[in-house]
Amino acid sequence: MQKATKLLVIVILGLLVNAPTLLSASSPQTAASVPAESAAIKQFDDAIAKYMAMRNKLRSEVTGPVKDSSSTQVTDASDALAGAIQRARQNAHAGSIFAEPVATVIKRRIADTVRTEKLAPVLADIDDEGAPSLAPKVHLRLPVSAQMATMPPALLKVLPALPKELEYRILGRYLVIRDVDASLILDYIPAAVPR
Image (cartoon, rainbow, N blue to C red; front, side, top):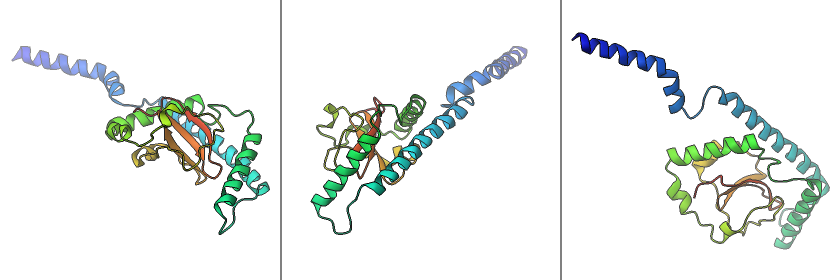
């Protein structure tokens, strides 16, 4: 009985001593990473706000389609907006919106969601034929007719919210942020989507 009691005390002491290590190993986020994640998301939100301010200014200068516009007029308006955005963002590059801290947070969130929601089969079956060979580039035009997979709702829930003029899309293993009206890739994260 005494040996069993001593053994129990040793096991309990071992658990108490190692509890912080065990807890941090089982938790996907440490307490120190919460402020870092918040700062990264704020950086992303600020980049989106800056882009939207620039876009809204350009939108007032570039005529858009009106009610009952023909498909040609819609295409012309999209082309004009895309051209204006490209000129205004001449120095834009990969990472200008998805800066490294943001990309790290988003990749982790996607990986965690794919694992916990068992989304691997869903992502493997997404129909984006031809798209995996197409590598995204900042300001690459991807019209609505281009084959790009949309985001599964479970992934959208863990990504930062976007204004209605922007959307996340999957292009192969890339996560892309796209201006809907301009059909323009604004930024992307490579190897963000496990397939």
